[in-house]
Length: 143
Image 1: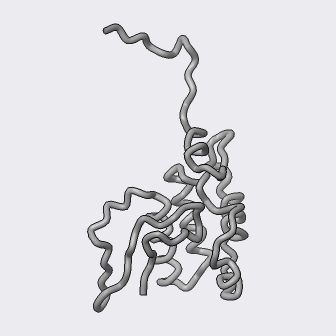
Image 2 (image 1 turned 90 degrees about the vertical axis):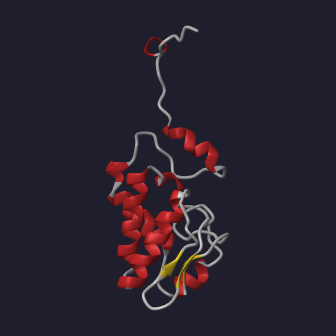
Image 3 (image 1 turned 180 degrees about the vertical axis):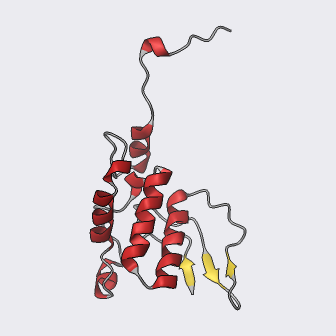
């Protein structure tokens, strides 16, 4: 049983997994000493663990959205793009986009003003969270 697989599309995020985490042995988990540099992969992993432990898809999605909001990666949540496994997951009663939209609306207060969710190029959406400064706020640097 794998919680998350390297190179697979994430189900809650518009991203691809950078992690491979699986159960091995009795009550043990292996992750190849990962440092979890990709936050969507880390949050996705936590979502899968919550879902598999509780069996509650809605609650797992709530936790994913809360973590995404708190970690500043809400804009990478999958609200528009389709996933290769959507048809299969809908058959299991897991409508990822619908649940994400519901919880994002519920936690709207955490969104930065003017924030976005997803562009075709995630690099562009990452710039939405940079602060802008007026010229008089910037300090001159003397060499």
